[in-house]
Image 1 (cartoon, chains in turn brown, green):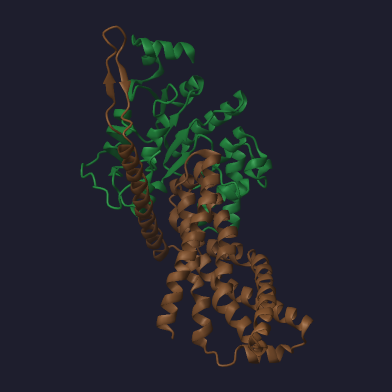
Image 2 (cartoon, rainbow over the protein chains, first blue to last red; image 1 turned 90 degrees about the vertical axis):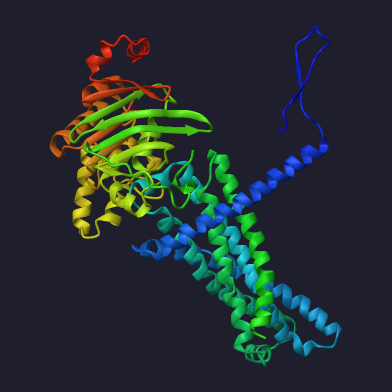
Length: 283
Length: 262
């Protein structure tokens, strides 16, 4: 902030400080502050990531807590992911049928649905759904623990909070995302087939055979397993936001919101990068 | 408030050597936002002794306790726990020191997703894997009985009062049978009878286990009952340290004012 200039009031009144109102200085100051916060955030995230990684690979391991988190992230997200997957399947089914019929390519319906769900919509939909549910939950839970000194209490008890709280949650997200994606894809394909069958009967066997015809593992496995990266992003950002919270209830709300917003943003950006990587690495 | 999460990965180890007693603080300085909260603090506590730290609100008493357990980093000075300087110590090594210490937080800091019994068992689950389930349960129930919370073992922290949470927090701090006890306002929020019971418990621990304790308190009656020495903080410095009689006979105006208002 620039030094205030003083305006002398013609010998009779007090000296009145006058702030520098030069627009260029104000804009540069704001940009500088934002840039500083931007790099500070990434720097802190890097330090946090290193500490979590180091805690995760050194014993003692928190097996019981990991299993609990696998249940929290996996089992409890399944109904939502399944429902969302089914909805996506029905929507794609209806849209694809209409478009393909217009262009006289109705026979391509099964493969269109299969490839759309497994390669594109299934992974990103699962990532965003889990980010919303799990990311907000982890962010809020850890933020609440931070502001009520529970994380300090864990540390004072000679237990590494990075290992107990962060590493277990992040690992659970990494392991569960591909499984949830498979579940979401399965529900999407099933619902999409069912929606098609209601309009024009098609046996499930025929649907599957036709849908996966000509496909290889390279076409289906990489898009599913790329969601492990989404899990890493969701878990890492949620834990980071939660464990650095300050400011009471407002801070907890902010942590939960930021976990979802930043997690979603980075999942979408990661999708762009990973799609390109998969196209190059698994042609 | 700065914490170990904010420190650089490698902090310069303070190589100054330490001597007995059990807890020794030398020239401890800590500032927040340019304001010196602790300014050249010197304290020591031996085995079987209790030191009560008194002072106005906001004078850094809780910060002092947090520095002793390593939750807050200091700006300069040394903190020796059983002869080992913990300043700049690696987290894993600091963990082995922390296992010998029990800490009671000002607001208990109970784990709100665990029951009262599970809260007390938490450090045992992590650090005493050799204990059988029965042994662990017996210790938990003995500790609950000592703090008068035996009937509430299956309740959640949100279902009990602040004073009861404080008692559970004390039981949790004692779970690993520490050699050093750090208590932040142990009797705050308790009725006079419960306060007396907690004071008795601290005295018993001092006698039977020769525990060294540092107690931050505003309760002058409790301080007089349990403490061998009292230290009065003001503006970041130890204004006076000694027995209660030393404080009574002090000619420092702030000391007399503090005693009169207590």
